[in-house]
Image (cartoon, rainbow, N blue to C red):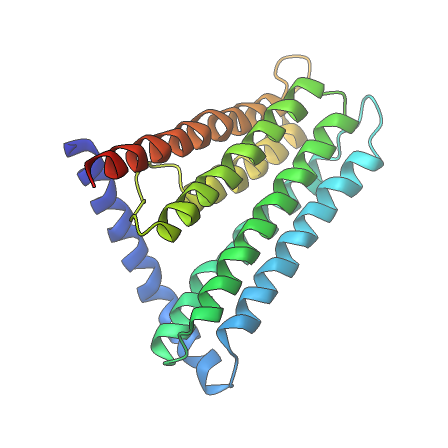
Length: 229
């Protein structure tokens, strides 16, 4: 329990630090008349672009060429446009534009963002001969969706369900950092000595394992609440 509390404290501190940096830009967007839903849509388009970069790299890959420069670019795009995931909420709060539809729209597009990026990675891995990595990425997609689905179903039953630690922000960080690290390592490292794709495979494995563990932890939490109600 103490570990969870410490993790939450660190996570909240990092979030507040990010808010302090982005709030001036948020206020600028509000003055320009940009709505939270527009910000959310831009984030989706950026993640679709990242997925397209992965897909393009995979489609044009040769056995001895994995286009690591494009992988690096895709990782950077994911980081840049995932910031919009924080921007839309802040625009809504600071601009007094919160709405139930906005919350629904944001949640749905978050799922689309994650499925597009992980789908792009899975396709890239499959095309470059990493079938096991593609399968692991598919399992990461399943876990990512189920984490959110279990929470949504729980809230529909009147149960607060935020247990678990590999939520969307953490999954985005793992995905984007791994893509950047794999891409940059692949451009400079000797492929005979080290296969940079291992970095991406390990990252997808982390998401696959811990996202699904989080989903089942939430199911267990709901079962206990319902038994005691």
